[in-house]
Amino acid sequence: NVNVDNKTIVVMGVANKRSIAWGIATALYQAGARLIFTYAGERMEKGVRELVDGLEGGKDTYVIPCDVTSDTEIEKCFADIREKYGKIDGIAHCIAFANKEELKGEYLNTNREGFLLAQNISAYSLTAVAKAARDMMNEGGSIVTLTYLGGERVVQNYNVMGVAKASLEASVKYLANDLGPSGIRVNSISAGAIRTLSAKGVGDFNAIRKVFEERAPLRRQVTQEEVGDTALFLFSPLSRGITGENIHVDSGFHILS
Ligand code: 0WD
Image 1: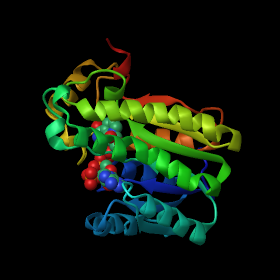
Image 2: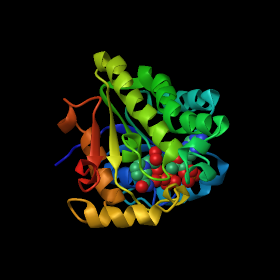
Image 3: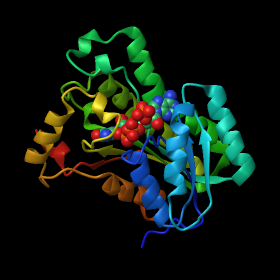
Image 4: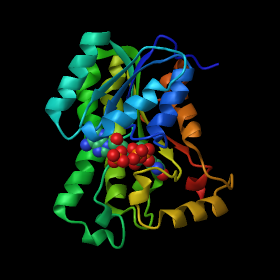
């Protein structure tokens, strides 16, 4: 019985019901957490609010904007959360973006602008968010981000996003070292290929899914719910000795050559 009762957790990156962030949110909500949702921009607001309003159980929720390309917006968002809730216990960072044209063909064709865009939204944002939240996190707090195997090795078409994930995974380690003395843990989950809005942008994503299903030790896809349950573990005291870690929730695919 994993307990996150009385914990206040910020979930960043719900785009729709297929979002991995939504899998994490539902796992946390069912386990008793109080949730705050942030969305990328006005375009996203309606959908996120509808999803959140549909959560059963009537627990307190809060939905606010946070475009992570803006330091001002990040600061405003966390100041707003601090005013309403005081301290928080966790952040689920489920955000990434790269130009679609750069998620196919040769990595070599990445341009400077696209490279920096992917790094900005998909990697730096974790550091920016950790910085804004550090003073309002309780001891025992936990930050969880999402990564993919393409950050560790070459996965066809993942390209600039793979390089951003490598940067994100290194950030997890440096942040874990900075925040450890305050009793705050930072970890990532490396998820298997899951059909979401973002995943649609990756060239030949269906081929990646097919190979995954044929070769992964468990011979099946993973779900948002499975990633959600691992995130729940990482937000709960059960994982209190783990930081700077990258847990693969990928049917074991990462062990293959
Ligand atoms: O197979 C997959 N789907 C995997 C995803 C495998 C392994 C890892 N991941 C990662 C992604 O790289 C990402 O970090 O999981 C995370 C969540 O992605 P998702 O659930 O696959 O995709 P999606 O539902 O599209 O959520 C990503 C969201 C954005 O959605 P859109 O579709 O609008 O790009 O990231 C958010 C946004 O909500 N986002 C931003 N949030 C704040 N500020 C910004 C921004 N500037 N840009 C994108």
